[in-house]
Length: 332
Ligand code: NAI
Image (cartoon, rainbow, N blue to C red; front, side, top):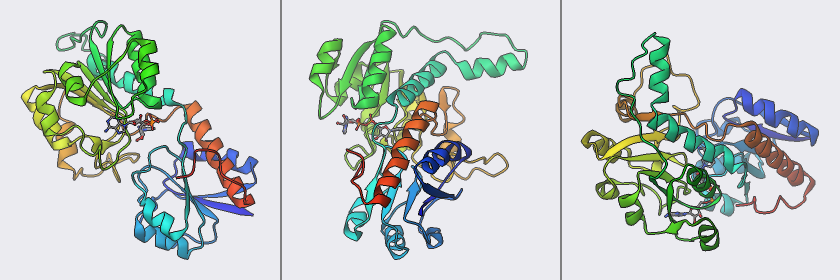
């Protein structure tokens, strides 16, 4: 019998991954807590483990997994910045991910956040429920005719650019590996990051988190942005230097921010902390701005994306157990 331990699992994981794995003869043990150095000792009698974005797979965890005889680390997400890949490779631990689940899920959420921010949807919704039907403070702007800058034109960045183009926005792009044919086909233009920041009304981040992209939006870049810019981040929190962002918000240089990710989200996002004290003063400050919209890493959360993730992950579990090659492009 093939068994995998699934960490940081939520009801929606159980509902999608459970039946998919069962249909392939894989048994899953679901744990609600995260896989990290403090919990790795609990891994036993499994062929592999399945983790998500905030499990922390550092060298200690890799050593613990090998000690427990684990052969496959299956990430049920695209990003892998939380995994010490060198340690995995050295230990002979196979690592796979789901590189290309519905990019529409994530791109559409980026656009939902932009619309909510610009048209003050959350604020208006709360007001109406208090029988306050005033419109004061709810002025947005037409996206039509404005400029959107897309940082990172992979799968998700491309879908976001195409959606925003549908609103009648001019699209600027930046990427060290430009997809010129696609850009030409749509009439989009590649520029460098500084030019994009200086000319965009909306800047949306769609790069992976790597040493090169860590704090790609830092104090320096924030000095060069078009005044009043909206910044959207549905990729990884640490693409943005949050303290510098707060300064730019206070100065009015940044006109609004919409985040689905936050650099210190581990241990906070995905959980109900409503009866706890929030210890993160930076997050607390962010939450005080009327022009900041935050969701807790839910861009992937559509039926289609969950189905894609469950299918790829469970198929890889089955293949691994059968000694077959894993799905093309999923091995890191
Ligand atoms: P992808 O690999 O298709 O595209 C990433 C693009 O970023 C590539 O074209 C790459 O050349 C570009 N890039 C790399 N360094 C750059 C730099 N310094 N400046 C500009 N561009 C750069 O990845 P995909 O599928 O589009 O996903 C992007 C990211 O979105 C993932 O790495 C992940 O972190 C995040 N994500 C977030 C989710 C959420 O639920 N919030 C869900 C899924 C992905």
